[in-house]
Length: 130
Image (cartoon, rainbow, N blue to C red):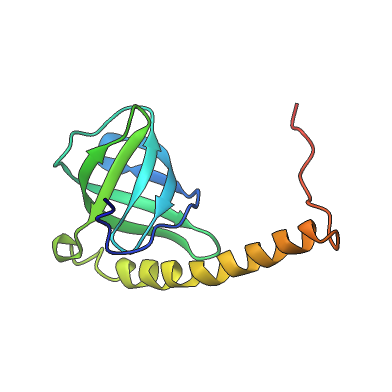
């Protein structure tokens, strides 16, 4: 049974845990938290600082509990706004505004894919980097 309060959006954002010098990439994000794919784990229950790079906006500084570890691929973070330090507290409202834009971007993506399916557009991809 799904226990999440807020919808999750599949988006890949660069992430960094400064205390652990650990880089990662989000698998999904929501108002309440995110799942970050990382190469090594942070212990469950640990309170961690997290930097996320939001497209166009820049890097935001958040704090969360490591709520769970995934099946060998990452950590689930639950944001804890009440624990933000003074220098972090203004980042969360910017993050919230970003998250609230994602449903509109999903609508645009669905429109694009529908036009591809109708043959009006060709699905574009970059050539291989090899």
